[in-house]
View 1 (cartoon, rainbow, N blue to C red):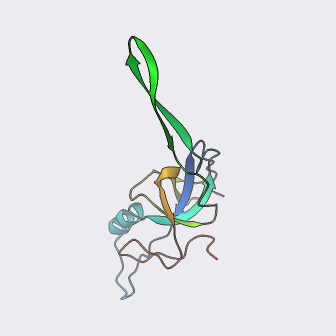
View 2 (cartoon, helix red, strand yellow; view 1 turned 90 degrees about the horizontal axis):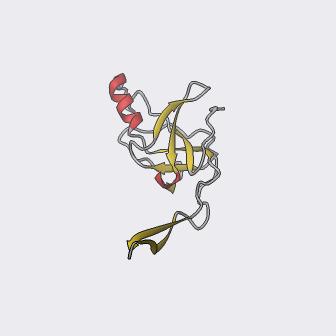
View 3 (cartoon, rainbow, N blue to C red; view 1 turned 45 degrees about the horizontal axis):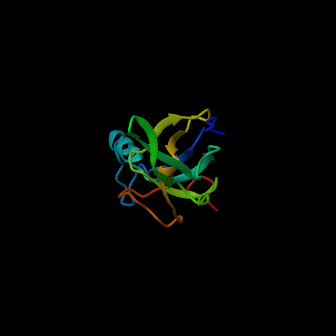
Length: 137
């Protein structure tokens, strides 16, 4: 649908839509709604790159006696995927690249490490209520 196909360890998230009117009937001005949409931190995982949610090995080398030698080996990332396409997730505030998909909707392209948790429909991280997530069951 989105026409966005992430590469490497990137993922695509459809942020939850922000209400444009409060429960009390106050209409939220467009500039304020846009600010809240950018700071939105929950959404639906739409696509996952081939290397997302896998571990990687980082080797630190230092110049010792005129030669580069490995001095530290660190495993980073994940032992197994913890989120799948269709899951509602939390992600880093203001994180990623905001891009419009083929379908005219706004998406975020994020690093897999920016996904901080899977969340239920009842979880909200903003002071403006979110609409139900795309594809929520």
